[in-house]
Structures are given as structure tokens and as C-alpha cells.
View: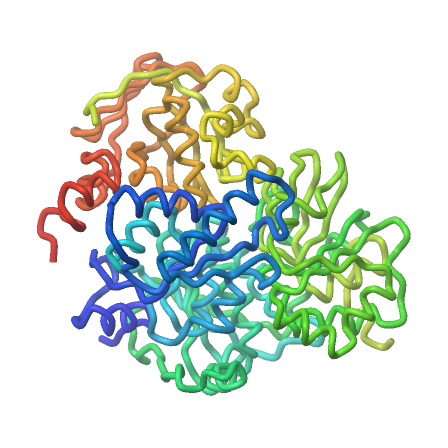
Amino acid sequence: MGYTLAEKIIAQRIGREVRAGDFVVAPVDLLLAHEGTGPLALDQFEALGRDGLGTTTLFFCDHAAPSPRKELSNVQKRLRTFALEMGAHFHPPGAGICHQIVAEQWAKPGQIVIGADSHTCTAGALAAFATGMGSTDVGVAMTLGQTWLKIPETCRIEVQGQLPPLVEAKDIILYLIGLLGADGGIYKALEFGGPVIEEMSMEGRLTLCNMAVEAGAKTGLCAADEVTRRFLEEQGRGEDYMPLAPDPDASYERVVELDVSQLSPQVALPHLVDNVQPIEEVAGTSISQVFIGTCTNGRLSDLRVAASILRGHRVHPDLRLLVGPASRQTYLAALREGLLEVFVEAGAVILPPGCGACVGVHQGVLADGERCLSTQNRNFHGRMGNPQGEIFLASPATAAATAVKGQLADPREFLEA
Amino acid sequence: MEKILRGKAWRFGDGISTDHITPGRYYHLRGNLQALAEHTLEDADPDFARHAQPGDIVVAGKNFGQGSSREHAALVLKERGIRAILAKSFARIFFRNAVNVGLAPVLCDTDGFEKGDELEVDLEKGVVRNLTKGLERSCDPLPPLMGAILADGGLTAHIMKHGGFKWENTP
């Protein structure tokens, strides 16, 4: 019997065979924390009293960037000071969202990556075993260079067919979470494969893996293949590539087959990510704010598809549009391509790269009774800073169409235009 | 950690997220646990934030603690003196965080438990008794490593004690 991607990666790193259900102590190749979770991790590191870092350590100031409050400014200062002293890599406000920078600059196939942020699973798109943990786990890994893992069972997601125009990776993952449920993947790995995934860009794969945790999963994984190789080469780190695929006879807890040829744009309704409906069922719902950005859908291809719909249109007068590129690299590319001009001309606000609006820290906090359609990954009660607000989740195409129409709208209406 | 916990139940439903437990709008209070803990679960039950007492027990349905990795979600419950959380299932990061900070996550069937019920949790025997309703439920034991971490009072204490991860039959 062969091995899943999760089993293979961990087995390679610890130097012996493992199977789903085993408990192991494994080396950590890369770890990350940000201003919301980093300080507690530093507390543990300091309590353990070691002199140096146990592994490559990345800090990000992305959840409150730039800082809206002195308390958060002080936390960011602490991370910067610690990083300088200990040789950790510090990413200041404006550099971008941790998961996007990890994909652009750090993660590589076959690594074990842990982060004090639940969306660390995003890096699974590069065939890294990447998973979110709390600050204490990360602080201990920062000290020992190790963590403990239960080898997860794997749910194989086999995606077939042909994605219709303006139906995207986000629609696949929303549909899947609706199918599995928000707890359908607890403690499991979701392994994405099949013809649609093989042809999908790295940006689409990052969107899929990003939301694995929204089904409760420990990580989402894609094989490392030619798409991975090209992505790493474009990032100037082709040497980081290593092919990695599950065995054809791997043992899966479950195989879910999806044919996406007839898939409609999907929308998650308040207040649960698995409360998913096709756009046909919910079009016309009035919306006050649209947010295009985040670690889920703030990448260049997301901004391109949104701009293709917004070009020549104005944002509906009843609604605000916020656009946040996921990283400085994305920001610069969107600027050079003229995408930001399209957004600003349409009436959008461009946010600095970061997480603030999605997490309700700052920028784009909802008023009582307002509804927001966001390309982010979570719509929990109170998430965008106000428990009296409601959050809907959808793709960048659906978000852009909604921004023009002032109500939940089907992006396919813009196909002839 | 004590083996038998007794306390009053606070009842929550399915899918309580970390945004319910410690909302993002209090992000700036993360450095001040006592202030942050005043808002614990206030969006799910404002009464809890105001009136929960040390020793009380949180009872929930499925997927408790879903969402963010914020360890503060486990820490604010501990700060409020909550001793255990009973749920039908836990989101995995929260489950790990709870054990890491020395708060017992107890997997058991919580149907029929209501707010104010007197509960007794025997962590060693793996039994939950609802003294008010006369119900008894068995709970799933923690994996050996997590049991060892909890018994040591949390992960940092565990590492200080053993110098690394240590459990029965460590491979």
C-alpha cells in the first residue's frame, strides 16, 4: 500500500515510514508568527531559556498594518527587536500577508511548516506539510526546532471536468466546504488532485489550500509538479523545486470526486463558512461593502479578474469597495499593470497589504446591520469588527460583479461585456 | 491538575468560533489577558462574560473553537477560571491550545445538558456526571502525549520537566 502526500513528507523528514494515526516528533523547517500570536510565542521561548532559535523563524506585521493603536505598535516593536537580536526574519507593515510571503519567498516542497496562524495551511499548495498551531506550540518549536504531529488521515479531493468562465478556485473550495461541513475534515489532510488541479495555477491552488482549515482540516496539499516548478522559477528560486506526489495506491480515508463543469459561482452566507449556496439562490441580496483581498484571494490573478469586470464601470453608489493586494509584490505588479487604476477609477479604496479588515482589527469595520461580501475565508459572527454585521464569502469575480450591481450578483452577467 | 472537577454548566451550541470566544475587535487587548477575558464569549452569551465564575464548566456542541489559531481563546477561558470544556467535537487547533495551556478539553455527548446543571468531570476515569439531571456519559481519553502535557500543566511546563516531548511508548 502506497503513501499519501502527508505521510510521504513527514516520513522523508523524520527518516522512517509513518502511517495515518502515528504520533511523531518531527523537525520544523520553517515557522511563522505575527503580531497577534508572536508575543505569546516569545513568552514561551523566553520561559524555556534557550540562547538561540531552533529553526528558521519568520515574523510578520500584517494583522494591524500599519498599526492603528499604540498597544499594537508596541507589540510590533517587540517582534522587530527580538528578530534583530535573535536572527529571525522580520517582515514590517506593508510587506504583505504572512501566508502570501511564505508562498512567494519561503516555502518549498517537502518541508514541514508550522505557523501561529490557522491559515498556515496555505503553503500546502507547494507540497509543504503546513499547519496552523497556537503560540505555545510555535514558541516550543522556535526553541527546540521540533514539534509533535499526529499523522493525519487524508481525504482525497479529485476534481474533474472543465471550470466554466468566471467560476474559480474559490467556488470549488466553497462548494467543497458546503459538502464536507465545517467539521467534516477535523484532524485530516485534504489532498487536492485530478485534471482540474493539474491545470490550475499556483494562485488557485493557494486559494484551495488556504481554506482547508475551514473544513476543520489540519492542512490542504497539492502535489509538486510543473506548475510548482514554474512558480518557484518565477519567484527566482527554481532550486527550491523538488517533485512530490502521492502514490497511486495511497490509502485514503475517503475520496471525494467533484465534476466542476456545471459549477455555479458559490456564496457562503452568514455566519458559517459551510452555509453555502449557488449565486442563483442568493442574487439580489443588498450589500453595503465589498472587500477584495486577503490571504485567500488577494493575489494578482484575483485582482486581474476583478479588474476585468470593473473596467469601465463605477462602484454602485449604495456600496463601498475595498481592494487589498496580498503582498508588496502583488501590489507592485497590480500597479504596473494598471489594475489599481481601474479600481480607483471605479471608486474603490486601495488598502495596504494586510489582514486588518478581515479580522476586524481596523479598516472596513461594518456598521450595525450592514452586509459585506468579501473574498476572505471566514464569515463568523463578529469577524469584521461588529457582531451586528453580516459577512458573505465569494470569489473575486462575484465580488466585482456585486460591487457594480450593489447587490449579490452573478459575474457571468458580465461575460458578453 | 486535579483529577475530579465539579462546576456549573454554561451551555453553548455548535460551531462556537474563536471570534465568539475572543473577538478580533479586542485585538489590542491581547497583551492584557485580564482585560481581554472580560469579553470572553460575549457575542455568544453576554451573560457568560458578565457572570461566569471560577470553577464553571463550558458545555458545547460540535466543532468548539473553530477558526483562528489564537491561543488567547483558550487563555481567556482559563483566566476566567473555567476548568474544563465539554463538547461533542473540537476544532483541532483549539483542542491542542487548550491542552497546551492546561485547560481540559473533554470529548463527550453533551445532549441533554443545560445551563446551570451541576457537573462532575472525572478526568482519570473518563466519566462526566450531570448531577442535576442524573446523567452519566463516558468521554474519549486524550492521546497519551496530550494526556501527559495536560497532567504536567501545559506544554511549556512539560518541556521544562522533560527537556522535550515525552510520553509512554515515545517512538
